Image (tube, rainbow, N blue to C red):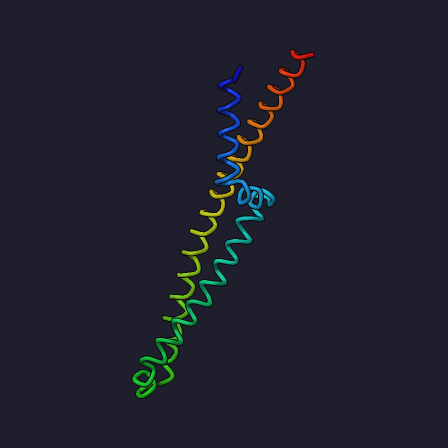
Length: 134
């Protein structure tokens, strides 16, 4: 006779394995702080690369008009503005990425915990079935 609870558990575990399994195993292989810190640093490196590429592109597009009447004071003001924009962008992305990756780790850990609980329930059901057979 088919046990409906067992079928539901098996279905739920199969869906989890197909949808989240590999990614959650990779994520939960790290401590939460390590995972969020590593991915936040990676995000900040990519933001830095994107910012400098955008700055270079903007300089190539309109740099000639900036250089024509430039003085030391204007150069310092421009450098301060660029540095301010860069630092504010880093702070915003750093806080956002840290929060995002912490939440991602927490969700993966919760899903993994539920998956492991379901597997142990299935194992207990199988053991009970084997005991009743003998």
